[in-house]
Image (cartoon, rainbow, N blue to C red; front, side, top):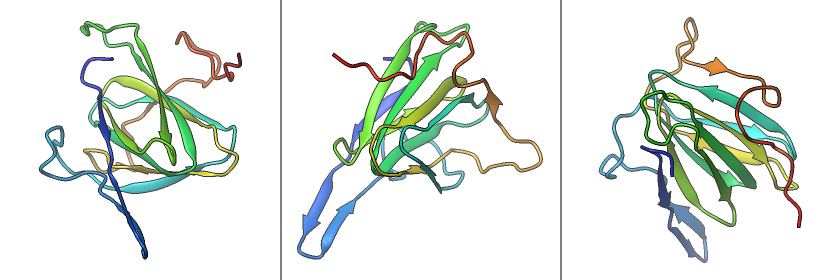
Amino acid sequence: MIKDVVVKQLRLIPDERGRLMEILRCDDEDFTKFGQVYMTTTYPHVVKAWHYHKLQDDFIVCVKGMLKLVLYDDREDSPTKGEVNEFFLGDYRPIIVKVPKMVYHGWKCISEEEAIVINIPTEPYNRENPDEYRLDPHVNDIPYSWERKDG
C-alpha cells in the first residue's frame, strides 16, 4: 500500500425505511481537517485521471455505481515511490479511501450506470488558483493502463 493511503470499510445500516452509511467523522483516526464536501459523477467506461494536489488530502467514496480508483506514488521522498494501488469501490464495496497530497489519482466508472462520487478534501476549492496538477489520462509516464483486465 502506498505510504499514507488509508482505506476504511464503511458500515451500511439498513432497515425497512432505507439505509444509512456514515462516511467520515471528525473523530475518525485519519481525519485531519474539513475543507468542503462535493459530489461528482462519472458516466460508464469514462476515465477521469490523472491529477494530484500539493495542499490537500482527498477522502473519496463512491455512493452509487462502481469505480476503479487508481493511485500512483511519484513522491521523491516516499518509501513507496513508483507503487500503484488499485481499489474497487461502490455498491459492492463500500469503502472510503484517503488519498494523500502529492499522490496521483484517477478513476474509471466500471458499472453500467453512472457512478456517484463524494469527495471530502481537506481544503476548499480555490477557483482563482486551483490546487490541481494534471496529466493526460492515457499518455504519461505512469505505469498503468485503464484497459479492462479480462481472463
